[in-house]
Length: 182
Image (cartoon, rainbow, N blue to C red):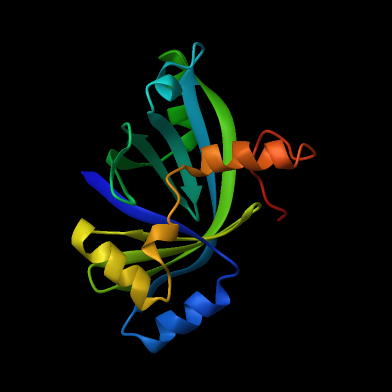
């Protein structure tokens, strides 16, 4: 599957929640902590190729994700994404280690999700600020952003990993991992 998204930084999520409530949007999940662990080879081959291999834990679910290199259609980021649900992140970590991949950076966010027309709207609270991710068919992303009072041109191209690394340069007191307080 090709993932198409806009990621727009915002000053707080309350206004977006209010706008979603004023539309025909449907909340599909309440805020929940996501824990993501990235894996790569010792030589960083996946990161160097713009690829991501991660295990995500959210609630009682465990999801393995591969993302290919990103391409851009204007402000819209597109990349191949393969996800599968697994029964045990610990067993999968063992398997990945046996294949030569080691855990690297860990990042967390509190995410709630909404459905607005053909778009999925994710409200993400992270240790470096709040973001709205709009995912769906390319032709509906900008319209969904505008419906929420957001400017699609304000979308950022970077992943949370890249954004965190840039944030750490401004805030050297922050650790390698992007983790929140409980």
